[in-house]
Image (cartoon, rainbow, N blue to C red; front, side, top):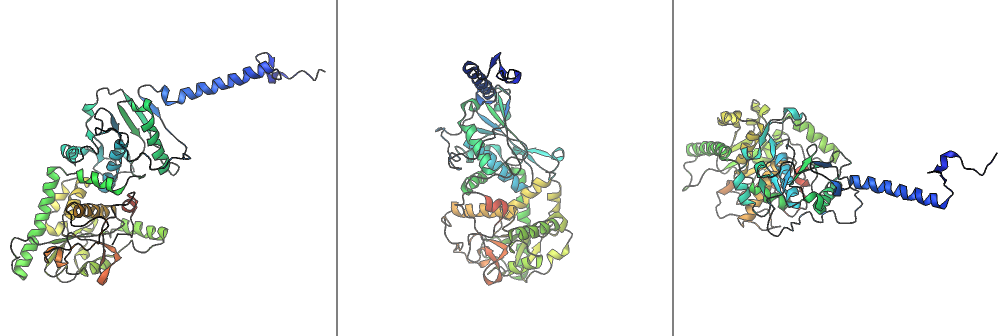
Length: 463
């Protein structure tokens, strides 16, 4: 038996692998195979209507916030390059946050965001049940572009010149798809000329803008200021506010005479989260976070609102923004301190205004009513409450009533304004105990580097 002859399975192209020439040929062949595979998957080989996942390693040495806020176009957002996003779901305020993230992603890529589709219903777990409604049915299209000019830009699908020039970008989901991976993907897309050449980048994935957040609060605030409701919704909110003030005037005239001058009766809006599903959620959240300042009973809310200094110097209407299933619960209207007059939609006589609209528009009306209130009281772990306080804080900053990092005590020369408390447009968190047994004063920290405290709740209310 010839033991020096290698077996057949170690021969290559008729040569033995112990031959130097054959070894070289073998290594060169392997290298060519790997090169061919690389060229197949590299972005340089993409054609029209290409789909690519862009799953990148998170071990990059570059800063995670590098390039996030950079817009190097010089002349504003490009109007000939677009970003398309999937339908946005969940509640009103989660949708507003997701829309803002979509705009900020488009800004990062220096692209115009194509008119996004929102969800009028709450069937977020079953996509086929979602009631789609376009952005411009809720918010004013032209007003948005006017107010956000140079920062972000909204476009229509009719603006696209070549509908086949599309690059499909898959967004990951689940725990493995971290904030770092999401940001790294966007950075790589921004830096890749072969991707940037496409007229449209179409993002695919399940709710890709609901979770990951690497934008500063001030960027969100800038976009929220541009989200102006369409006239129909604004007029409905004005009808509700007028009804609240009308009742306030009637009560004051009957009990305390007329108001001085042309002053309108002020009102307090309370976002009262005591519905069953919220209480289950907040108790689980308290256990998970090992905190106690999340859930509040209706008795605690009533007591703390009644303890706000100066709030009941004159009869005051308290508008209760409550879930629809609490409208038949008369107990939310009893137990308030003397001088506080609680009203919800039905008692106010405005339920007919709300019930003709889907959930999203009902929420938008309620949001506007709470935003305009002279005093707002909410839960710091509620996204609805948190966004209202953010906009009220931004309003104080815009009018010069406060400066960045200043005290929550914003004084006014009118002692009757906002319940005689001497504070202009005050907001409070009823789930956190404040002075005199009342709720804690609340303003948004506009220097936060992310929206996490607003999206997920916090007991840090900057006051």
